[in-house]
Image (cartoon, rainbow, N blue to C red; front, side, top):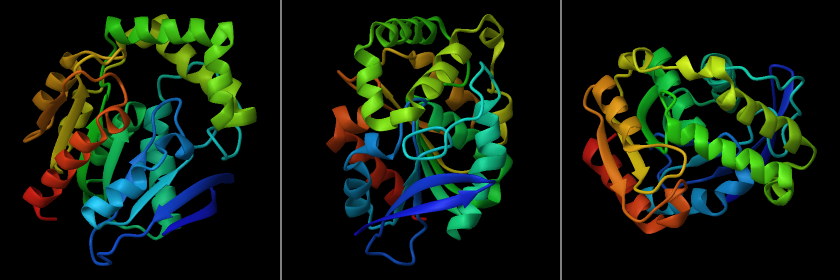
Amino acid sequence: MREERTLSVLGQSLYTVCVEGNDAGATPIVLLHEGLGCVGMWHDFPEALSRATGRTVWAWDRWGYGKSSPLTEWEANSQYPAFEAETMLPSVLDALGIGEAHFFGHSDGGTIALLFGALFPERTAGIVVEACHVYVDELTVKGIADADGYFTEGTFREKLNRHHGSNTEKAFRRWADTWLSPSHRSWDITETIAAVTAPTLVIQGENDQYGTWGQVEAICRSVAGATSFKVNACRHVAHHEKRDEVVAALVDFFDRAAF
């Protein structure tokens, strides 16, 4: 069953959904969307994941995305993932009454999950990241520069507007301007995430247009015991492009860890 709620968190209205699992005692899974994502862009993945694992799955539109409150500013800021991990995510979990969770983070959401796991190990049962970035590589910059061009032309803007409405311009500009800023080239969280102690799975599409396999290797070097899973013939959104493979990998991850 899918339930929609609106939370008030730190003065902001956040749109959330919950898909209740059939194992009431199991630790829930929290989905953290990508830099231009929202609840609507997960489509039916929360339901598929809940059915396969038996766990309750939560997702929400971060501040400035989808149906949540608009951003009050959007200038380039390399610290926005840290703000989400340090401030917003624990506040959202508190508002939902979630003490400990598993996290599935896509792209920027994966970065947030790793940063949160490093800061709050007692609240992190497990981490799965997909197409995650922990430093800036040239493929990422090229991919975002291409997206910026498509947005300016209007085609990409129209697609995003269907999900983000009046939030579209600010959400896109913060994401693109941050990643394309020269000052962001030195951003690197590999040392920070070495504090992660939770079991961690790193998923990457073979042909991801926004990041290289080097991102996976960097995470696995930093996070003790992290394992990787390459999805062949796949780009940036493996949980849609190769749904069955990704869900099977997640079920195996949870079954082996038995938590």
